[in-house]
Amino acid sequence: MTAPPFPVLRLKPKADARRIRHGHPWAWADDLVLDRRAKAVPAGALAVLQDANREPLGLGIASVSARIGFRLLDRNPEAVIDRDWLAGKVTRALALRTALYDAPFYRLIHAEGDGLPGLIVDRFGDTLVMQPNAIWLEERLDDLVAVLSEATGCSTIIKNGTSRARALEGLTEEMAVLSGTAPTAPIPVPMNGATYMADVMGGQKTGLFYDQRPNHAFAARLADGARVLDVFSHVGGFALAALAAGAQSALAVDASAPALELATSGAGTMGLANRFTTLPGDAFTTMEALATDGATFDLVIADPPAFAPSKPALDKGLRAYERVARLAAPLVAEGGTLILCSCSHAADVGKFRASCLRGVGRAGREPRILHTGFAGPDHPVHPSLSDTGYLKAIAFRL
Image 1 (cartoon, rainbow, N blue to C red):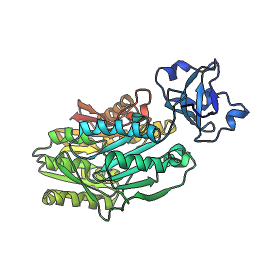
Image 2 (cartoon, rainbow, N blue to C red):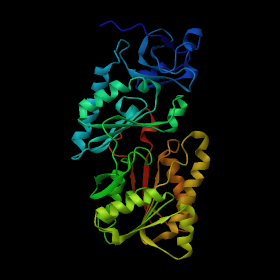
Image 3 (cartoon, rainbow, N blue to C red):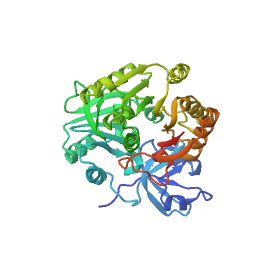
């Protein structure tokens, strides 16, 4: 089949084409020759990328007015990006998850980690929640829905178009049911022996965070008989896993009352509501109040939102993580464990660990690092993109 005559983008002579040949899927706009023809390529259009010698590097998505001027889809410059091509990507992603998980609850598509830039798809049994965060995906929604439905057999596919990433692509916010019927109640999700309630229509992101699954499991190993504090708990992530593993009690703190209601519902579904309590409010204020009251716990977890989502926010974000550590450490009983987490793209594990250690040290505690965890294997990391390996969780024995 002859490929359509795609527009061509070319790297400047000083740009490092080896970086892309060796696996990186992006070309920065600053590295492109932005002549009249290049500037005329519409955002989201397919284009062929060439090196300075006009040798093709692959086929991808153009966005020359953005910081990332080109996202690679296929190293074959004559590839046909159609429904069959999408089906190949989805089928391979599904095969990996089917091998990894016994139940159909996982992240099915993790953007560049699965070769589909800008696309997030989480699976909740018979329901898929899709976040198409790039123009090229928006233009192929019908094909995506067909491919996802055929591959998984899922009857309901929901579009959650509320992410900040869409604004960068000039896309509007939108929630829509693309296939099937929207759930009328939260979906029970079994994970690590616990049951979580996912509100896929009104909850945060797609309704649940699958990425922390292995870190929940690690925390659960320390939870038998323990008094547990889960700060920034959302729908009870660490707290419910700890209860399932035999925790004596679990206190969940979060600013969102609806999220804590879902956590309480999950504890009730597990038959453990009598050992579970919630405390709605600002996490920093609540930790200070607990310390003033002399409260201590055997296991304390703090899993805050992304304080450093970008490089300009890095310094401020690292100070926020240090403050979390400083306030959480006094709440850990002697010989107990503190688990601190970061989902910030810009803060690598070394910078995050250093901030945590400063905070723990300022609290007058002596730490030992027990474990460093990351996202689960349903969140595959593209080795050239730190963004796909954003999650860190560090356990300290104090």
